[in-house]
Length: 515
Image 1 (cartoon, one colour):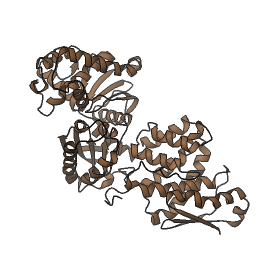
Image 2 (cartoon, rainbow, N blue to C red; image 1 turned 120 degrees about the vertical axis):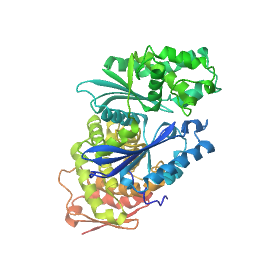
Image 3 (cartoon, rainbow, N blue to C red; image 1 turned 135 degrees about the vertical axis):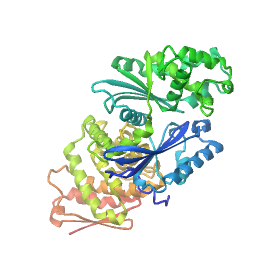
Image 4 (tube, helix red, strand yellow; image 1 turned 30 degrees about the vertical axis):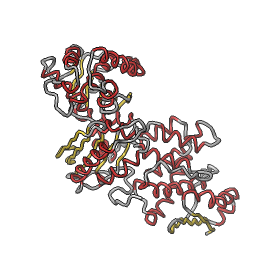
């Protein structure tokens, strides 16, 4: 198990609210570049005090079996170690590190994440493509405030994926993430380095076909302005400006001569576009290809370039978690409504689960992050009933893990799914296998508390559970319940008798007695 105290328990990273003068940091572990931004919170605003960027090209290291080559892995770990040195004096609650497409595609992500977290000194969250899109939009919206009532299209070309978002104000309305990025597409279509019009047109047709799955819906919704985020979009805008094609924006008229100049090089190593940096030269062909396909599929005429990207969105998301607009709470409430969850029952289970939690949190070393996840699991534990009553905990676990839940990383959704999967009946051995070691103890202990709360409310009685006392000693739980109340509930007594066997899959023993 990971013993680094800076990472233990960092499930809901960045517990806020922030105070004036606090430093916060975001690390973006992208498929092309790794970024870090450090800001100081002052008077409700974030002021950037430091930025670091290194070209790692993580996507280049992907092999055909979902692994990373040794060279790229070493390059990534060295970079994270340097970032970790800068973050050493910032409390772990004020740091969020986000991994994106390439780490999502690893067949055994923990083989990379464990040494990566050790090098960085902080937990690393893996986010879904749509969660990445939400964070991108949030960063752009805060950097360039949208006009009231207007719709905005934001596009971000990363190294391994490209995100498209339509939003209004600070809220993302539509989010899409496609498996095309500047590094991946350059490798895929121009792996030998040769550039030709024939290869370009064939690649353009292939990528454009992938865009068709959402292009019509986006065009029907429409937007008032389009913005490009990330370094690739910025680089293309700077090239257009240096070629005197635009004044910094990207336009439909500028792309054909830009493509002509690119293809005239004949080979990636010979590309000599004005304002193009040497570290971006090896992947710019894929970026321009994706940009042209997007303009064609969406009928774009002009795209301005934003100075912000996902890393800024991560910082503002951290600030939002400390206020009244926590995206996680809104997302869970939306799921409850969408799947018709019994709100009263969920509230009863939540209240009892928190009573149990407060009695054993100190003994079991559970923190506010674990408490928050217990609340989420209590609210969503019956979500699987929308599919079927039989095995509803299994259905619920699937929904919790695979539904896009705003504000949650993959590990957080896997944590939630494991709790829901194991909240009733026998706990299977593989219920927690997707979780990193640093989360196993808190996940199993939180699941035990949820089990007891659900068991105590199996009858769906409106009356609250009377006094109950729970004691945790090592891996043993002992519950005391009022004698008369318990004697009036023979079904509950039978459930409690059987719980000692069912809960054992959590590595926890259980007993109860009458008070």
